[in-house]
Length: 238
Image 1 (spheres, rainbow, N blue to C red):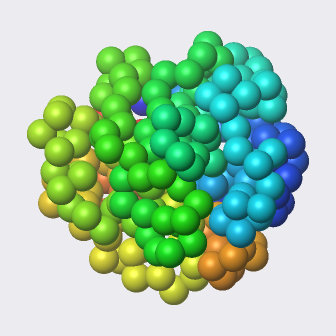
Image 2: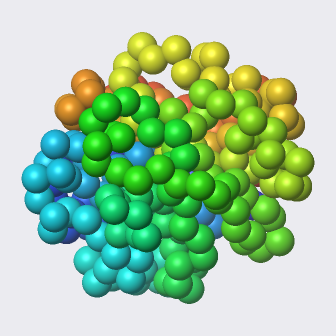
Image 3: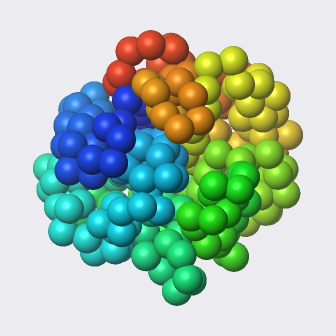
């Protein structure tokens, strides 16, 4: 299977604009042969926890009509989209949630970030309690979000659960050591393909560093989108 790892600069607090960008990238990636595209942490709103706390309208539901253009793009391209944002759940605060929208436009999976990073995340979101899994075309995928990836046991459970691909939606600034010390290490230590969706542009925590990409099970880079340009890269996994 060919999958894509994407990057763009989200518009702070503008769900509709970010949905349009995501839908366009899904269509482009589908045309390039990708069966799935993974996007950054909080790609639907931008990494802006203060805005999310202040504006309840930024919290989505799993069947939110604002996601309609992404669902349409998935159906048109025959491509799944892995998107992330604040999504209402059972807790007192929304989850920092990944939604997997399948090639038919339906929701295949939801994963709520288990390891919230710092104070602003912990006062904005409810931490998840379950691992994220889904199957596409017979291939088993695991989901993780940014700081989650600092905890090797998540990748270990994914490998033990027969996952082949580990999808990491993250917000990493330029110079973050995770590009060298986390993502390739998870791939190599657990024999997984690892795909990173990351952000560009300004955010509450700094400038997104890009370099979305994919590592093979030996820890080697298969694709790197670079630190500056919006778009995506594609590699074969499985």
